[in-house]
Image (cartoon, rainbow, N blue to C red):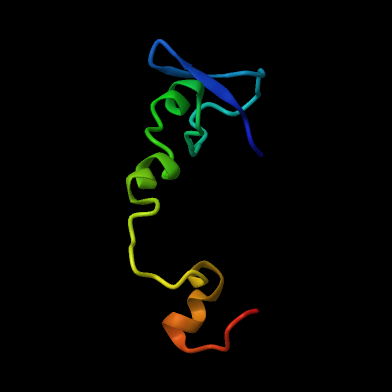
Length: 77
């Protein structure tokens, strides 16, 4: 069974009342909250943006035929 709740004053408070017996063992899995979403850091795009278009000397069709150039598979048309 899954119970949802929030941390208030350093303690976990469940959103809905429950009748768990005293001493019940529980497992807490922390989900992404609003605070964590704001602290997530840069996106993959933002991280790799400096490298976009940075490779020179590649064939014009490399983005379509990269498997051909890397592994020798037949070219896509």
